[in-house]
Length: 468
Image 1 (cartoon, rainbow, N blue to C red):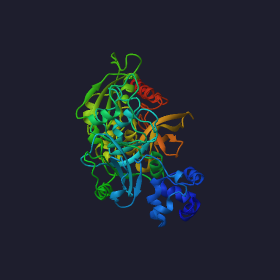
Image 2 (cartoon, rainbow, N blue to C red; image 1 turned 45 degrees about the vertical axis):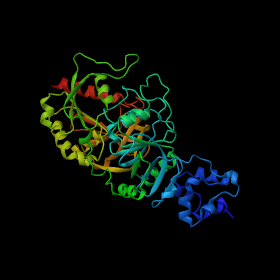
Image 3 (cartoon, helix red, strand yellow; image 1 turned 30 degrees about the vertical axis):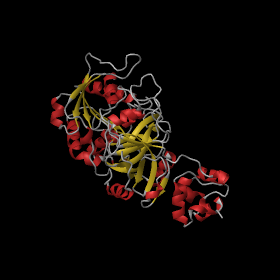
Image 4 (cartoon, rainbow, N blue to C red; image 1 turned 90 degrees about the vertical axis):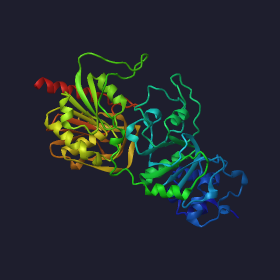
């Protein structure tokens, strides 16, 4: 005789304990009680926790049997060769033993694509997100269910390559319906050798990341359809994680170059801008192209240099301002070569502006410290308060590390804070002409509330020039 849903939930320790175990919200547990049925994808983990059989978990009324797609199932624990649902062609294996099945798309993988699993809450701009170099070393879960509907185009890439190691979506990717599209997301990923998996319960996965913090994962989409789950789990657990990892060297430009295109405008798109402008050197730790466009739009003549460029090489270009870009990895690792250069630029009296990784590196150059966030901030709806004006701006963010505000020296102060968790989102030096923010004022994707920071940088350059 099948056991009642209320009895099963009670054996698991109540609704909240059940929600934590299965990676869903308590609202889902309420719906299970209302329907008197538990979705079959949760049966393995519940059976393992309670000692019940699968027969105990089946609803007494056969019409209540879960009819959800065979892809998107999950198991937890050691490898179960017979647990793969019919139609599943890809698997996402988490370090905690969770196995999520789905339909593969994009590029096949000869070896599993391993990285830190994270989620992004942006509702638009998946192409810009995937090409953001700050996502190097990560597998992105999109919380918005419909990804791929507008296709891809040549103008929306934020870098030449996809830095992310894979993507996870809920719904199957459909054919694009947008006048700017030149290729489907599936074809675009195949060309860039990046795998994806669809049919995953991304809400459950997001809650797992939120509640348990970041962990490593392996996305495997084999062309031959063969899975060795034990090997996948072992490889996932062996991956060292992002702490201590310097990824800026992997995504930075190989040689200096100039940039003269401004932000996208209807109907011309991006276009070159000429004329007398402030000379800015942008240090590329993983710079997005829209940052460079915003600098040009604000009135800058931009020269981009690699992450390992020395202070002497920067100063030899005779910049009026220096910009420190976003980028991936652990700022403490990148600091080994970046901080000495930043310190010398500061001592030379050159105005400086940093974002994201550049913000964290400026903090370290000033004497501060950084730490790894349990979950990170990723998406285009993050509220930040500017302490100098009281203004709240909605920002685009992508970072897994943060500046420890308490570690900043007495001659530096906090300028912005997150209204989500109170973490540091900006700082300014009282000693040098330098400031930085943790988020992405260039957006792409995201709101343009913070574009004023580029204008603030130009005003700082002009003020410095008028004194000399």
